[in-house]
Image 1: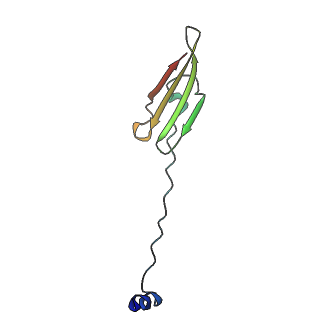
Image 2 (image 1 turned 90 degrees about the vertical axis):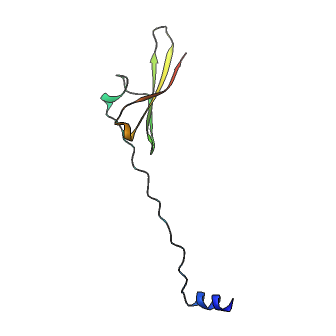
Image 3 (image 1 turned 120 degrees about the vertical axis):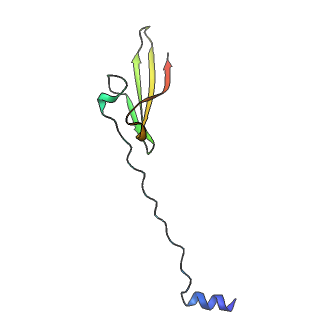
Length: 87
């Protein structure tokens, strides 16, 4: 026990290294002409995994449909339908 205290007092034990977390890369945002609808989306949210957008579009029967699409870095701006909800 005395030996450990003596070694610590000499500064021989290295402190634990501090790790720095790298920030998430900026998500890829596709050009407007690559959106799945001609009109711009109502909302878009981006995070480190991709970009998700929502459209509210009037349907032919007088209701409104909500479409949520997401695109991811590796897909090269190919949109994937995540939700279709019509009222």
